[in-house]
Length: 292
Ligand code: HBI
Ligand code: FE
Figure 1 (cartoon, rainbow, N blue to C red):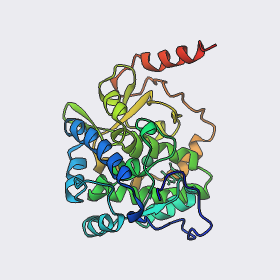
Figure 2: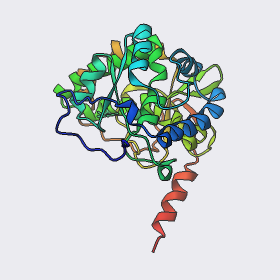
Figure 3: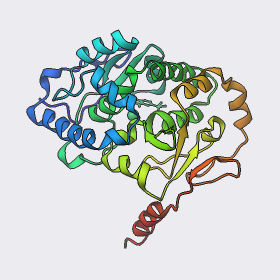
Figure 4: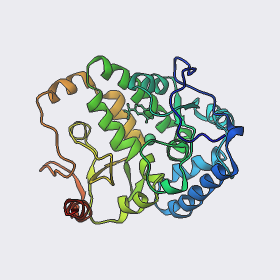
């Protein structure tokens, strides 16, 4: 049996968790993990924030094959008090936030097929575990993820989930971090993608802008292709501090009338690291536009 193409089983617990059923993975499943892992491990050391590589080591994720979540949770628990739990796919926002607020990271257990090597719609175990889990071994990032979950529960009560989801998107999924004069990757959506790991740092197309909480919560994002703007944080400490110290209620209120910003908008007050050419996004658009 393989974990591909599963739906929420009727037997799922109230918190949507299911057993990982590690022994059900086929040799092909493990080989797919190893292929993806080798490709990213070769390219990331000079691109990703060093804390990510440290996390891979601390959690022994360099071992071949799809990690066993109970082993991973044991190591993570000792380090930062986090656990990894399997879910059948995307779970409702509330359930997602509730898990984060309790230091549980929900992850898909299925792995992509060879046809999906470079793109898939739903997060698989490679994205969720390789992409997200190493930084959960970092105490400050671990606290940020919990703070985000708690903020999510409050945002839900205020009807502001769409705003807060943008914070997750532009940090946890597609964040860049400044390191001296250099930029480094830390977002899970980038580090689990071969193409975007190069694009996000090296391509002249996207904007790279200084992190600004309020600005970012007004900014739309792309779910279908590489981002057109990335936001750069100064440090995990700064990200955590801003998230914990900001009173989001007045911020959501102030944003109520404010129009959304397009993915490639530049504002006069933006701190610009790179002013993107947007050539990649424009090229893709024209190509599709010209299809008969
Ligand atoms: N479910 N499994 C899973 N993984 C996610 O990343 C996820 C989710 N449900 C909701 C959700 N993310 C969003 O609420 C966040 O992006 C804010
Ligand atoms: Fe993700």
